[in-house]
Length: 510
Image (cartoon, rainbow, N blue to C red; front, side, top):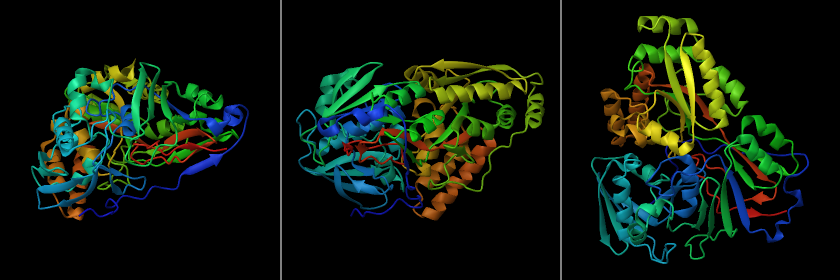
């Protein structure tokens, strides 16, 4: 049966940094006694609200309010029941889940075990997210409130993967009737239901009165698309928005020095990196990839761009994640070594290439610093800036040479942090946008997934990370803190270490 136990080896969520400070403007003039709308500023528009359509952080922030899951991680990374009230592992391959009764979808239909099967089957057929449930072989409806999940092999991380934000419960009738437009007209069973989408500007949700859990304290929730970080901060200062996701490091002091605002930081399991498309020349040559690792001054980038809100990444996994190899060290900054390797690879005078990034101010700044670093070793780097949706399409399709991205390890487990980004079978949209392949890495990750002994499982992941670092398919940049700015009257919000924040508990109080 289900036991409320902490995910193994995960460090508990660190105490939030919360500072309340000074200035003019902000929300001091707002009467919150009858305020019922929560306005959140995000850095991009969602590509889709179909949880099986994209696996990006922007979409999942919103989808987390619309959809329910079988189980979920709370803010301490403990697994909790959601649609499933209890479950047990029957044998090495079979798990049984008891489904909560009386759960309503936003269209009024009752959630049934058949909807659970439909949702998991649909998830497994999606090229965007199927890697999360790759180990599942079959989902079977046992009776009117139970489903059985059968895995292809023993899979120790199944519970963690079922808690992933993309493993959402869908209404089969709605998906079938709405068809291709489901991503623009989503139907879930979460605390908020979809109301309106002004493409490029905002997405509005409204409270779902028949939600089976604790009722939200606000009537509507609006996600505003404000791409430029400083503009998000200005919107917060003027009282235009209530909460900002991702306060730019350069604006941290402005928020902290404002009496009407509150600044929050929270730890996460993510890593930001520069990836190479190893299927294309010259990045199919390990010497070129290593040369660029030596040529980029990562410490300078983190110090200059992040201003204390991140630290240099030492390994493919953030140090608090289960299976992280904390014995690894990042490549040192050594331009002369970079030049030697480039000459060995046949590029004594360097070459010209392009790095693509989405239109995030931080990532553009990083790209420009990398451009300067690579120029010092003879590489002429062009920077191509794209809108978020196009950026995902280009990198997912392999139409790139270098790129900047972050991976949010939503489960805090090495299986999610490594398999999605480095397994051969996950090339492209599934997460491996480097198109990297190493048979031994594949073998180690898959063996780890089926290992019951948690110490042995961790060791296998650690061994895989040694090989990944040696292959250098990417330049590991940093592990960021999650940063938020809020009006002082916003209460009840606690950042989630996976990045899958729950905003349904927010309320307003003077």
